Image (cartoon, rainbow, N blue to C red; front, side):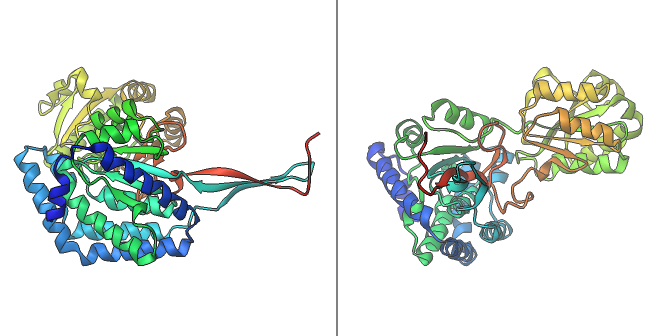
Length: 430
C-alpha cells in the first residue's frame, strides 16, 4: 500500500493532478459511449471476480481505515458504514453481477413516431458523459458507482472520503482489473489519488469543461457543499429524514415488525426511519407493543408531551428532534390526530426521501400515497427498502430527492439522457 500512502498525502499542485483526470475521462467517455454491451459485461464480470479474489487485500486495507477512524472518534453509524467483512465484499460482488445482468440501457429507443410529412422521429437513450461522484465513508460506493457508470456508458471520476481511502483504493483496483480484462480504457473509472480536501473544491468549481454532472453521497454538510459549489448539475439529496406512520387500522403485529425493522435493521442508512407517527386512536392498542419491541432492540425513544405522559420510558422530544436524521438507534415519536395531521407533519419536517404508512384501510393508504410527494412512498413495507438493489436496479449511487432528471434510487438507467434521431427522405421545411 506504499503507493496509496504516497497518494494520500496532500498534493501541492491540485490543478496539475486534477486536469489530467478530466482530460482522460472525457476521452474515455467517447469510447464507452460506443462500447458493445458484451464488452461492458465482460468488464463487470471480471471486476466482480477480482473483488472476491482480492478480498484479503481489501480487508487489510479496510482494517487500516477502521483503525484510523476509531482513533479520530468517528460515530458508531460512521464506523458501520466504513466497515467491511467477507459478507459485505461478497455483497459488492453480487451487486456488480446484478448490474451486469440488467438490460443495457444505451441505444434503447424510448419513443418513436412519424409526422404527417413522413419524418420518423426516435428518442434514443444515451450516456450523460463524465460523472463526478463524491462520497464519504461507504467504500462499497466505489464498486456500486463504478459498475453503474460503466453499465450506462459513462466515464466516472470517484472521490471517496479520507476515512475510507485505503478501502476504496483497493476496491478501485478491482474495477481497473475488470476494465483491463475487457480492453476498455483505464480512464473509464478513475479515482482521485489524494485525500487533500482541496481536490473536492477543484472538482466542483474548476472542472466544468470535463464533468457533465456531479453526484454526492454522504452527510448533510457534504451534499450541501456540493450543491452550493458545483458548476455542473447535481443529482443528490440533503438527508434521509424518513417517516413511518401507524394508522389506526394497522395490524398490530405488522406495525411492530415494520417499526423495528425500519429503524433498527441498519440505523446508519438513509432509508432508516427517523420519526414514527402514530394515530391517537391506536395508542392503547398499538403503542405498548411497538414501544416494548423498539426498547428491547436497544432504541432510545423521544416523544411528544402526550407520549411522555403515557409512557415514562419515553424521553421528551424537542423541536429539533422532528428535523434530525439521527443515523443512530434513536427514534422521534409523535401522536397525530389522523391522516391529515400525519401528512401535515411530514410535509413540514420531511426531506422528501421515503415515507411509509402502515394501514389496513386501503382508502387511507391511497390518499397517503397520492397526497405526499416524497421520492419513495410505501404501504405496509419497511422504509429500509429504499434501496436500488431492492428495487431490482442491481445497485444505486444514492436516493435523489429532487424533481429534475432523476428521482428515487439512482441506478444505471437514471445515469442516462436521450437524443432525438430523425429519419427523412428529402423533406424540406416550407
